[in-house]
Length: 269
Image 1 (tube, rainbow, N blue to C red):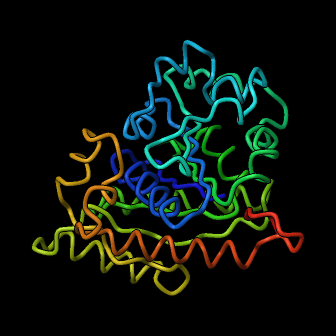
Image 2: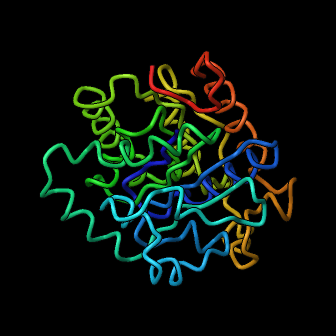
């Protein structure tokens, strides 16, 4: 189980989730994308009718409340091996509700126990906060992937997210690993992007794997209008090579952690 997390919005978390998820599914793996952002962009990107899911009370909000099982809420995408546990605006209420519960940081992990036994990968698209929804995602996850825009403000927020990851390791998930950082919206023609990318490598390159940058292109947002990941339309689009490296790294991480009994899931420890 992997969280794509960054407290800053617009850095490419959803883009990463839908493309990595689709690429894993295209390789034959069973994948569930958990949309943990009340904006529900991941589901919308993949043509999920999030309004209908909310009306039927089959979203992550109801899973967290214990009113629905995760398996009952899954929606198939154009590749049936990739399914979505959808979100809705109502999920924003979970922040307050989780805050009022004791040991609430374990809620998502406990709600996904059965699901993670039955699928190969679970990807969590985290909201742009450091609140209870993100903490729940990190506690439930085996590893974290951090998309980070090659802009100074996005880069400066990395330290805060790293401290949140360390906090979760100390309090609830000691085996949580950091899969790497994916620089996004990179323009090699601007000195600011070049300088920020260099700062990433200088600051974190010795301890964290930094993937090749995803270039700034309009192709990714345009693909959402087609109701699928960009890789489904253009397998040679700029940046797809980086997502392929992420996929390879995730598969290697899964193989390292896989349960000897043969369950096709990543598991703690």
